[in-house]
Amino acid sequence: MQMVEIIQKKRDGKELSTEELQYLVQGYAKGKIPDYQVSAWAMAVFFRGMSPQETADLTMEMVRSGEEVDLSSIRGIKVDKHSTGGVGDTTTLVLGPLVAAAGVPVAKLSGRGLGHTGGTIDKLESFAGFSTSLTTGEFVSQVNDLGVAVMGQTGDLTPADKQLYGLRDVTATVDSIPLIASSIMSKKIAAGADAIVLDVKTGKGAFMKEEEKAVELAQAMVAIGSRVGRQTVAVISDMEQPLGLAVGNALEVKEAIDTLKGQGPKDLTELCLTLGTHMVVLGGGADSPEEARRLLEEKISDGTALAKFRSFIEAQGGDGRAVENPDAYLPKAEHIVEVQADRSGTLATLEAGEIGLCAMQLGAGRETKDAPIDHAVGLVLRKKAGDHVKTGDVLAVLHANDPTKAQRVKERFLQAITITETPVEPPRLIRAFVT
Ligand code: URA
Ligand code: CA
Image (cartoon, rainbow, N blue to C red; front, side, top):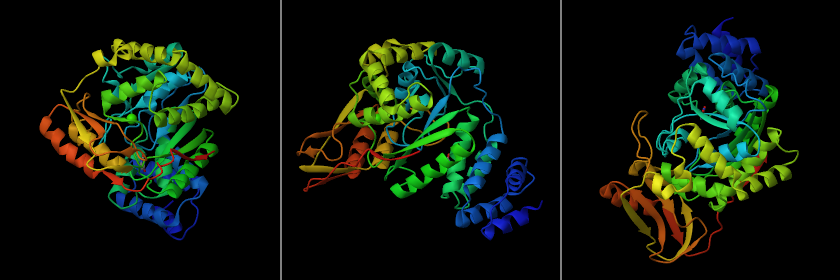
């Protein structure tokens, strides 16, 4: 086989065989095929696309390029949830204990965040003592005993994806639906998922700004799942504005606790129930979406989900008292600064990406890979898109440890929103389903 022939075939819009994709991916991972040939192929894919079979083959070859997490000793169907990335997205913290309380195991490999705010591990490390450095053995027994565990990623999962993503980044070939879809799905499959629930975000704060593109990406991922025997469903959800009210690590933990008590923000609660319903159905915990949703609502109202959260935090060394009393036991910022509306009208937009950057500037997110973060800082919205506001109303509360930064962020926040004279409908939270 010759790489030049593979490039030529794709350039001319033909379909590559399973063997050709295997040759390409494994050859690239082993350093036998140079970057320039893989770049040429990626650019051909960008213009010509890939068939569903090619996309599935590429995915599985990337899975095979590295280690795979073996979750077979965990009883039951392992359902993973993946979000394409949003601002203030606290769903994983809620869904872990909630879905486990409904009887479906949650075995989650997670990472730290880059940009905006922290990742799931950063948020969980708001609990004093919490650790995600579990051995695979500890991880598996905790999921079997408790129903939920979160482990930091170790091992070399999907090295070919890492390599290819790096190359795409510098060759203007990131924005290709089949390449994005296979990249995301390969990581979930290598992490041991039997079934996958995707939360594909759309809007200004999302990777896929346009709804049609988000749907297209979701369809590509669902098609991969069905070809490789991992049932996959996708929810397309709004990321014009941040999800929920809190953006920042400990602040989002508190928001997750409120949500598990049934007192969370409406949008976060609704998205968690929607994603959780799919997780429970795919995991075999209920026969219908209606039954799954009823079960989840019951686990919230009878306190089981919250109790599960506390057991989970304590099992991984965290101070569980913070679950009962977040104000006393979670990190707290020194300065509280209110941001007030400078005019009356309707809060029309709160640009999610910019608000994420406000939280990052306060110290909640990392600018570089190994930078430290401040768990206490961030912001809590008091108003969301569509709300009527009067001059002087508090729009958001900044939690800061540096008063100079807080003043700068206050100005930045006001730039990130628009207040209009005419009423505006809030963006719809759930846009579509792809199954
Ligand atoms: N996120 C990924 O993991 N892969 C892509 O290709 C794009 C976004
Ligand atoms: Ca939030």
